[in-house]
Picture 1: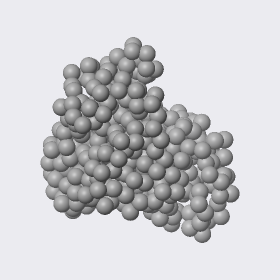
Picture 2 (picture 1 turned 60 degrees about the vertical axis):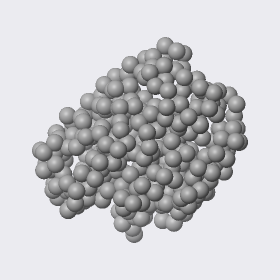
Picture 3 (picture 1 turned 90 degrees about the horizontal axis):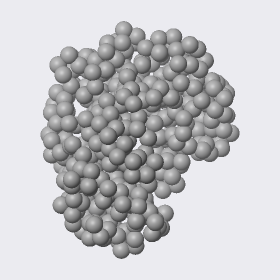
Length: 381
């Protein structure tokens, strides 16, 4: 299949959220119209919901699908670091649909992406209690301030609801959280997966914030995987990372990354994902230079929620300051410049950023000026 909207995932992929809802992939904006309870009762047939079938039908016709805008934007503004996720995964899982006559029906599960729970030890400014139990009190505080934040309950693992699903073709599993190396649910999940498919047959990807290491029992099971991809979350090789990711320390994250790379040297692919915001983007060039020295691959994404953390809305002089700060690394400059092509100053959003910084600095007893005095000066905080 070769058109500009086709993505293999809706035919071979299962992506669950911490609250047991489904999306075509983690990037998709909006949920599908079935849950893990439907999968528990119906098995693979649950994947053939009205919305899911409609998405597949549109892709076959070459129509753009509402919710897939992130990949479309990357393809409209390509950069030198990575292709869009759509193009990347079409290459990775294209074999699953090769020589098949496709229709709007789900085929078979080759790839599961699962959020085990929302148990996490960090309080990231671009996150919510939907993904981190640690943020329940903060979200209550922001809700009381009238910002419309929901406070989400603690979620528990529910992978057993896949027991009635045919997983005989399963080859790839992506595990999200919460934080996989902190949750008590990771080891039971690995034990279940081993019994269901055999760890030796599985390539696994985990997203980790790098604040800790897996315990010995978990490590023993991870050694058995066919391939093990570790995706480390680090937004800057600079203290602004710790400001954005409350409770973390950027140097500890890098040190733990080195340990993880060494621990699983037999079967590991190690990379870093950076979630760039107005708080961190000025340091992208120095961060990528640091990762280059370590020999680590990386991907770069942009914080869109809350919207005021996206640098697209900053004043023109701040935009120029951000671009100038990244000229020392050509890839970093290209990434920032591509993102800023749709830049347009929005006074209200800039004021919302001021309010966001002030409220959370009060809550955490921090000062932006201690981490980035120039940005604080631009904001007037």
